[in-house]
Image 1 (cartoon, helix red, strand yellow):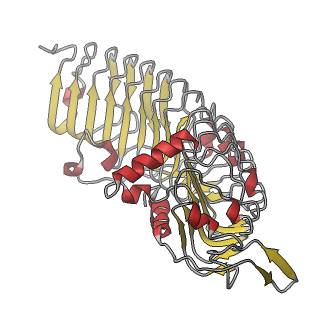
Image 2: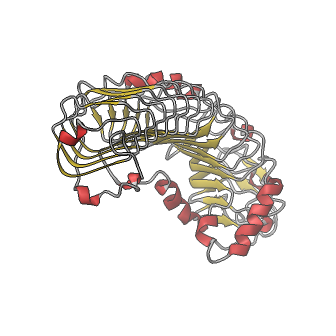
Amino acid sequence: MSRRTIISTCLRCLTLGSSILACSNRHVDLGGGTVAQEVQRGSRCSASTIVSDDVSVADQDDLDALLGCEEIRGDLSVSVFEGTDLRPLRHLRVVDGWVALGDATLSTVAEAAPAKVDRAQQIIEAGWLPSLEGVESLERVGGLVLQGLSAPDLRAFESLRSVGNETLYISGAKNLIDLRGLEQVPPFTWIELNGNPSLESLEGLQVASSLQQLILESTPRLADIGALSSVESVEGALFLADTSVPNLDALSHLNVVYSGLGLIGNAQLTQVDALASLINVSGGLAFYRNPKLERLPDFSNLLNIDDFRARDNAELSAISFNFPHRQMVSLIDPSDLDIDDWDTSSGVIEIGSNPKLETLAFEAGFTVAHVVYVHDNGGLTRLELGSLRRLDRLTIKGNANLTDVNLGELQTVDSLSVGDNPRLDPSELRNVRTFESEFSGNADEPAP
């Protein structure tokens, strides 16, 4: 399941609408006394404070019609429109389904109504929903989705005590600095924060020890992830991209990530030593474009990992594969692999475009793999193939200063390609048993 599947699937149900019922000002007996309600003509709650179906709000009239409503037994979706005022929701205590503030349906109407999408984006850019006043009475919701709002904080949710599906999705909240206001909500298990340019801290967020998914993406000022200190396992993917997180010390208790761990484009990330506690990363590890990442930890506790990729890390100086307890990489049919399409393959070890990488060694753990691809590492001088015995494909390409490749235990490579390594004498590699091989542009055979 992709990391957005559960969100997009659930949000599709929010497009359902309901008719607006006529009513007038009244008093409502709630059983514990008579409470005066500000019910206006046209309210949906003339006969009952409970709405039994989904509510889709397309304009302010739809919101005004909810004045006096205390419970919605379906979803509540508020689309983006100019001048949105949530105050008519001030009596609302319970929403059994999703609460989605923001145009949750933009992705579904993009092709059919591009003008509507463009207008919604214009409203968001101008500062949609600068205040969350009106949701202060909410105590229980089924799920929480906030998209495109310009409110500076979430304090209006301080009465919230329950999110039924334990899911939090916040996207495009341009002024949000932290998550204070959610302190009373029991721990979330699915967290996706995407495109929140002012977010600096996860303060206020309660996080479960076992997560379904954790995505922190396009949050360039996010540095404080201390709220994640309880996390021990992630059933889906763990993905940090375009943040200012300096280290992963908050994840020192993390043991298992079942669908892969990716660290991509984190401008201030210098070390990830906390990942030494990992035991299982079924979907693989990926370290891309982290310009200050200096080192990777000793992964000696790992029992299982499918892929390992490190690419475009400007300060990374050494990589050692020392997984003494690891099971072998799963193999797939070599014909299924497109060497330019790494995301569709498995059993891939790719080390590329790390200009300060000097040494790369396979010390223990990898004995059989589908692909090892070592390319364009300008500072790499020595490659130790160590524990590797059999490979479907080995490509060593474009490493300008590579002079030494130690074959270690390597016996068989189905497809071997060694090229554009001008200082490397590949004579030893020519003796490896292989079905097909290609050599060009190396020290013994300069490129034309």
